[in-house]
Amino acid sequence: MINTGRPVATVARELGIDEASLGRRVSTFTARNDIGESAVIVSERAELQRLRNENADLKLDRAFLRMRLFSSPKEPRI
Image (cartoon, rainbow, N blue to C red; front, side, top):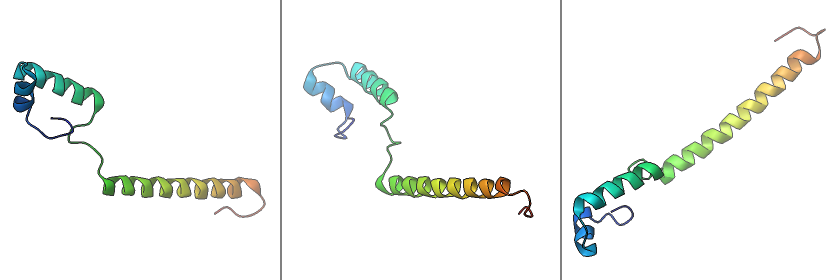
């Protein structure tokens, strides 16, 4: 099922409930909690962190250049 990878039919049989009913509940839970096949793997998480750090650095660079550009109007603009 969700965390164990066991088939819905097997779990439904063990619990003594209808397979279709359990399947609908699992689908609803998965959709609401966004945990299906779209789970972020470790390499994606590392890449995301690297991109966030790079984005922060670029924002600082941009802020510095804007400050430099507008702070001294006597100097030629870049």
